[in-house]
Amino acid sequence: MAQTGSTGQATGTDQKQPNQPDQQEQTSPGNAPSLGDLGFTPQQTQADAQMQAMLNKRTHMLKVHQTLGLITAIPMAATLITGPQAKAKGKNGQTITEPTAANLDFHVALGGLTTGLYFTTAYYSIFAPKIPGVKPKGAIRLHRDLEWVHGPGMIVTPLLGIMAYKQENAGEKVHGIASYHGTAAYVTAAAYGASIIAVSWPIHWKFWEKQ
Image (cartoon, rainbow, N blue to C red):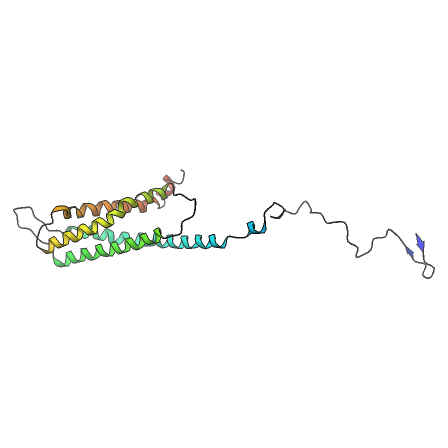
């Protein structure tokens, strides 16, 4: 302890100064380590804006695909219902009862509406951005596999329908390959309905989520 001559105040050589920093601060045990402490670089911790934008676009397009798919099922069912009314009735050797022009035209209009909605629905699925390395499985895989049935069916059915329409307008009973128009329509509708059911709750939940 040294004493000054004028003031008589004691000064300690080891006295801590108010503004003198302590030793290097150490992380308290209660503080969680940062991502940098765990070895992640700033580039790794930043969000991938391009990937997020692609995911947002894919989500939007698939939601539209789902909505349009359900809407398409309505005119598709109506087309199947009106099919018998647009078909000539009677056996060979008997008087053939031709469908009315109104029934025939209404059935054709419903078929055209169904076809247009179907391929619009397919557009949003086909052109939705794909996630690299992600493969469909379970219910989604079944949904995709059924596309190989109702997809060609939605091409063949209208073509056969046009042939049948021309034969009906000519006053003929539908014959030849055009006579399979109804069969193709029912197979297509069944596959389309199954593809909707495959990804719908609760069937999707019960039978596929556990796989």
